Image (cartoon, rainbow, N blue to C red; front, side):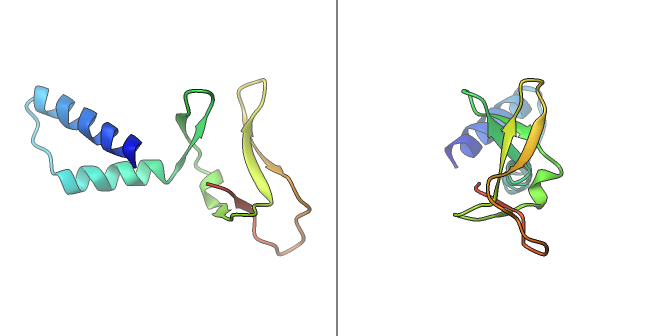
Length: 92
């Protein structure tokens, strides 16, 4: 939530400096859409768009995790046995 609020403030400042009109409710909606389709990685928790990984549902006891590899790729890695027909879940 704090990250979203600081992002909204930054975007509002940039839009105002450029003389653009903006609707706060639409801006909040756009930020929430981006955040719901991204994951944080690295020590600075930078946000990455992960268009396939957002199909995995949340679980407090997930069977998968998203991680980066040494070549800069994102991987969806099973951390438990996943049975045929079982839902793929991650903790977000």
